[in-house]
Length: 199
Image 1 (tube, helix red, strand yellow):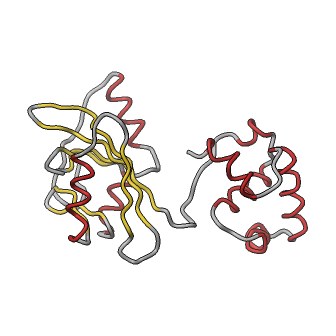
Image 2 (cartoon, rainbow, N blue to C red; image 1 turned 60 degrees about the vertical axis):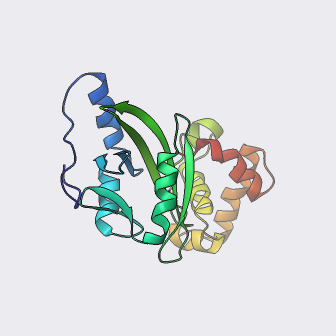
């Protein structure tokens, strides 16, 4: 598969391992596999798209690199220092707008090489998050869920009202019901309650 930086290994097969890879391939979170030389083995479409943009992290001649070379040594040390437990790394964005947050771990060894799974996302306030079944967990309505998601993205009640084309009073009414259903009294409490449901 081409990722704008040369060929990566084409993974083919059937059975559970192949199905697992197909499942991960459809994940909206950028994910990739690299070896101990930071050579790209596989990347899902969101990661490929990110690499093609050439911002912050990219793929050049088949190797994962950073657009700011001064941070590459720390990133390589992070990846190569990963064991079987998940490790994290925070990379300041080149444009100064937040960070890229990485989670990685060693996923296996083969042919004398180590292989690492890396997932990453932006810390930007408007980064899009999904929440699992808030309607089932807390009996929230669709409108209440939308208000909660907008708050979690950093929007004000005025912005939510404008975006949803409802009055500020309606937004406040939704929030009052949300607070009651989640048994919280503040936004901090709300965010704490929904955090475990973030995907």
